[in-house]
Image 1 (spheres, rainbow, N blue to C red):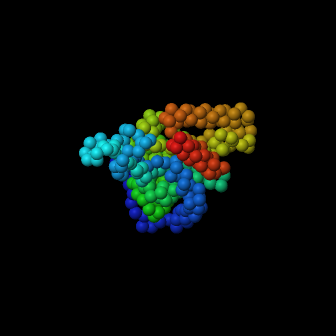
Image 2 (tube, rainbow, N blue to C red; image 1 turned 45 degrees about the vertical axis):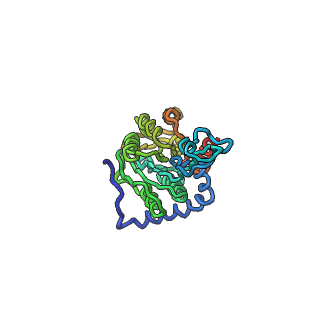
Image 3 (cartoon, rainbow, N blue to C red; image 1 turned 135 degrees about the vertical axis):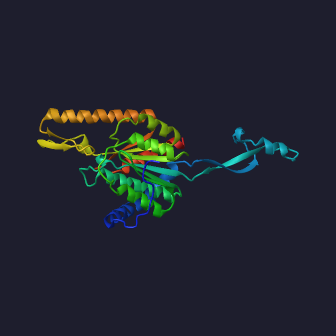
Length: 307
């Protein structure tokens, strides 16, 4: 199996623990006051579990009639009986977290990776509050870490810490490989949140396969400077994943427009791939915050499920 599996951390980084604690404090109130009810409305359980057999009532679905029980009835009026099912609420939630070099970028108060960690905390605590299990796949151009799904607050904190922890070295992004790994280790249907800036290629087919098996939600984190470069004159630009450098004169209108056009075309290709896969998708602006797009996504899902 690819990837480093869950293991203990006898010597935790004190600064990392402080960052995890700050995120826990910041997100716990939001989960309690805002996300708890939205989570239950937006994400269904794994299926339906048999509860009991009762007499047929007007309006019951005739497909639920239990003919075996009905035929064995000794009542003179020969009542019909139906099967009653309860929703099985427990979910398995997998966080697929991109920690490649490009996520260590940010022009606002937080890096894209830090925004993803806060989102991971929100999702993990919301899931745990609803007694769901949470797992993590952390990836760069390989599977950097796999934490199997479990329940409990301590486990949720572990997941947040691992999203914040930097990978061993700067790497590119193999999103296709991460999705293929997900399909191998998570056979049963799960709710999967992909936290990434989607700066990758060649992932369309595994994305479609993952969306067929799982309830896949893509939370794409972008930084505004990736599409709106400032007019500052000559600038040395470095690729965060490959280390390649080039100097571009950003005082040139044509240079800025060419970069903006390339970013716009990449965004349009990404949107088209996600639309063809039929996944839920929200764009998170790293500078503006996650609240509005995430809650809007939850509302859309709840409305579709209860339609």
